[in-house]
Image (cartoon, rainbow, N blue to C red; front, side):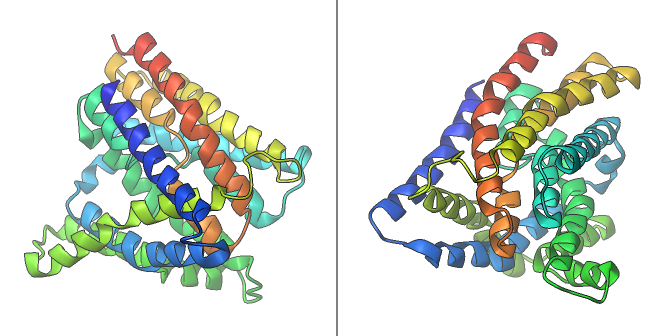
Length: 306
């Protein structure tokens, strides 16, 4: 559990630094969007290219990734149904809520969980690939369509695919598939830019907490609680049921369930902030699941890890 605690401490420490930045007026108001924009258009594409270009694409077909991906789709569908029946949300807010329900933090929390609890960092690579290559383009296409594009979803999808995040992901995947070796002269600046992505998102997240407490009335608390519950409770349960039903061995069941219990990724907040849709609800869901997932992961490790 030490690695998980270190991962949580790292995230909360940078978020706290962002909050202090706002508290002492180093950055005020919408100035934080500069961090989001640089992360979205520059640093995150560089990070995703460097990660995916050095990955093994064949792991996308592993039984664990099929289970976790199916669990993510199921809980996202449950959120959409709940949104339609109980708390009416527009398309962008529903999309982001559904994404919060199933899009896991497979990088800065997934890696320490994989290393220190699952025993191998490669366990989170499949979900990272699927989220970036399959889920992210669909989410971004829907968000693009809410900007008033009247030429249809396909045009919006084309614009989403031309998004720097998707270009960086696809380019990295192509490099991995072809087995190319990128010269260090090119990789070194990309590594440096990529290293800035997560800190910038977390800093912006912390800045956004200043002046507005989490889970305030009128900020879509019903949707936040629904997405958070689906993420930290239902998704690992669904993953466990699917893994068991498909006959995965005990360790694979443990891996799939643990990965599904990870909190919502900060990338979802970056999408919300960049497109200016459901920012507060998305921020609150990321914040709530980051805390709530720790005891759930500990419980999963205790029940299935032996």
